[in-house]
Amino acid sequence: MTKYQTDVAILGGGPSGLMLSRLLLLEGIRSVIIERQPMQHVLERIRAGVLEEGSVNLMQNAGLGDRVLREGQRHSGFRITYGDDELRIDIEKLTGKHVTIYGQTEVTKDLFASVSGNGIRILDSVTDAKIHNLDSDQVKIIGSHGNEDFEIHPKFIAGCDGFKGISRQAIPADKKNEYERVYPFGWLGVLSETKPADHELIYASHEDGFSLCSMRNECLSRYYVQCPAGDSVEQWSDDRFWDTLKRQIPSTIANNLETGPSLEKSIAPLRSFVCEPLSFGRLFIAGDAGHIVPPTGAKGLNLAFSDVYYLSKGFITFFKDKNEQLLKEYSDRALDRIWKSERFSWWMTSLLHRFDNEDGFAERLRRAEFKYLCQSEDYQRVLATNYVGLPY
Image (tube, rainbow, N blue to C red):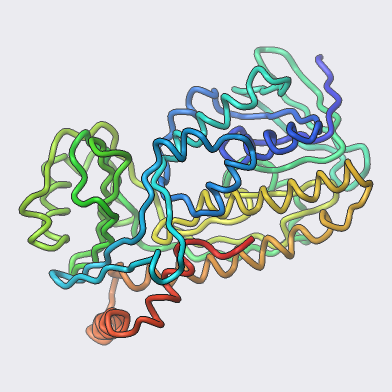
């Protein structure tokens, strides 16, 4: 058995775990990353691509700003459509800020390059990982890596291992509250080597459902359509997908839409979820381990990064000044921002999607909400302020 001593054991080698490791590395704080998937799998996952200014600033503070600033696309607005009616939300005019289109895959590559080979040990393809002695000062993680058992003795554990990870499950049931809303639909996503439908994102609401036109670069597009929660990818041929998308976006856009073979196709279920608190003993959880938002508000990765910002400050203050106050405050500070983002993501989802068994009253309310949004700059500013990201 191999034994490791470290300051922070980080469960999860995705963006939040890698970012935390990077921020700690810059302060001379040791960490070990434990990831249940092969890192190649983590690096290739297709995920969100809208970064708040706060997330870009965090990457810059971590010494990773060059590529995102060079290759990321700065967007000053986006469009919401309702049938053939359109509204552009000018986020730069309304807030003085912008968002950056830069795929989570690229964020993960940048972070991985910054920690691998820099003294950070990454154990990937780990099996049978378990947390022991969580309610004591002798916490440890055991598991298997490369057909060899290991044992890690950290001062703290950071659970960045996603919704299905072991970190949240390690918190006793009577010491946490979990709040959840599961939506009766998912997003079918397609990546295609085609020219984007527009130079900005288009959030499209239609009587048949929701669609999103996004992009990765000028030649690579990412599209989504609402689908029933029980659908499988095999039920959606490329032709069916493009036909659905064209029907649900304004005709002026659909008529000029460039289509092509899908490079990647997947279905993401939608749910809202929050665990309270985000800490227990020597364990602190962040990102999808502690909360999930529907992707409509583009908050998933951005919320994970704000968690990591708060948590890194707590660890740094502890190891530098022997002060635990920020760690004690971590859960409350993070949850305050999380619940506001949960509210916004729920609102965007309710505004743009069709729900099962809705009546005409619900549809008329949705139409009235859109019309009021079109007529009120104050209401648009509230939307824009949440979209670009609340302050940390």
